Image 1 (spheres, rainbow, N blue to C red):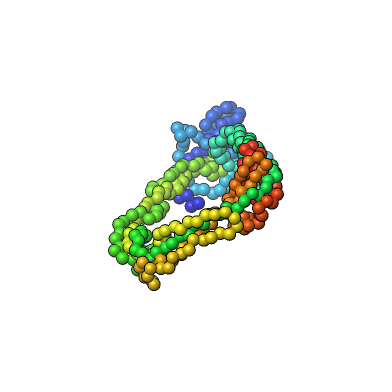
Image 2: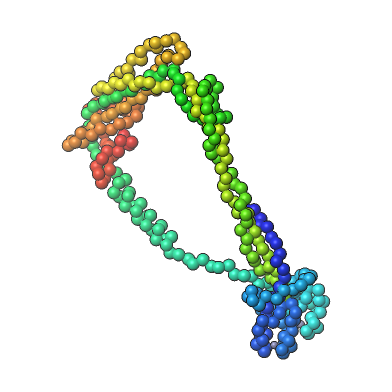
Length: 316
Ligand SMILES: [Zn+2]
Ligand SMILES: [Zn+2]
């Protein structure tokens, strides 16, 4: 976080009330004694004035926060060696302290606890209804497989990319401007005025400003082009029973290389185990390794969902 920019709006008198004769709104710097009854100012009881009661201190020279006389309690200038009220030495007298403007206190809310409780109850409910499992004895009754062999051809295709990412070998390139990213730029300032007690009967109003940011789009060239790529053009499929997978044969390429050449692409198998729990037939699609692990006729303990009875294939 950036340090806010600060600007002084001037110095003003703190206020105090005389506790002897009850005169209100006496000036912290000008009235070191009550003009009505002569009682000394208690520097710890100063307060900030309302905007209507603000009194400006012109050409203010700040010499430090006031000291509080240990004998009589009156506020004395930081420069004074002896108390102007009772004459006591001020050598190790303490500071009068500063008044701070209290920050507004946020109301505490129980809402968060109710939300948390709701989430926990919902979680337990989901576990009980859907996740809880039990074991059931089953017999492996068979194996099935389905095989897909992709065929690729080297041919011209259309693609799009940012100009700096267009690959070599691209042809018929045509580009348009388009927003690629954003950046943060300054858009004015957000300012607040704070009151700072200087501790000598005055306070300073300070304007604190933080830059306000907004995001701005950055454009770049977005290009479409033609290029030669290995592209999926066909899927050869086969399926069967038992543990022997017969992959579809890949036909020879019509041309040796270049555009029009063909080759084997990705291949994918689906491996299914057939089971029976004494009443119903069930099936599970599993990995090739799991599929080969079980023999036909084998007795196993399989996990099922306690609520729905559906088999948990991932735990075979
Ligand atoms: Zn008074
Ligand atoms: Zn004193």
